Image (tube, rainbow, N blue to C red; front, side, top):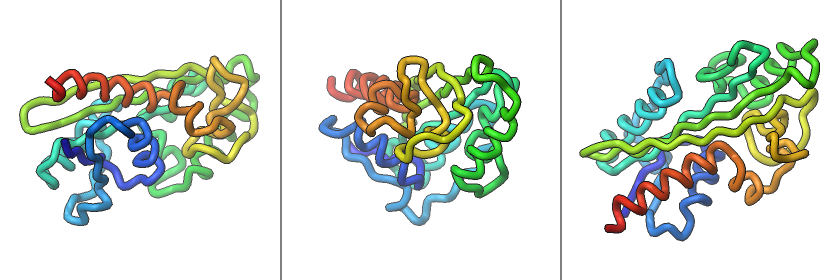
Length: 197
């Protein structure tokens, strides 16, 4: 069965393809559909943004679409950057600029109070219905960047279950404990139950 991943972000595409490897689902990305529009993430929640992306991709391609939206919620910043995580330092900024902005805003916050959680909402939209799965990981924001793996806030997020940041984990290690890994593995279980019957 063919699915389209509703993103052109190569880092996300790679992670999702690894999770679906061997599943029997054939994944394309929006990069293969130049006619598909870019979607403005105007939703107030992760679920709203994920659905905006998936519905747009499904309409543009005629294929069932999977999408996610992810937020990093930092307790000391009243949940920021949250739903605006990818745009925290402004529109069209680099991962590095977002990380620097977050570290700057936490400059005087002691380590014990730098608690945070990553949350991913993954969805599938087809012509009849949609399915939703959630992944969540508790951790803290480190005072400096560590590791060059991963992307986004990975080098400054340390899971409660690891001494390493997500930027120090291998892709295989990250996939088993990360918010996106948890969400898409759950979505894959839902899809297998739905479409294998």
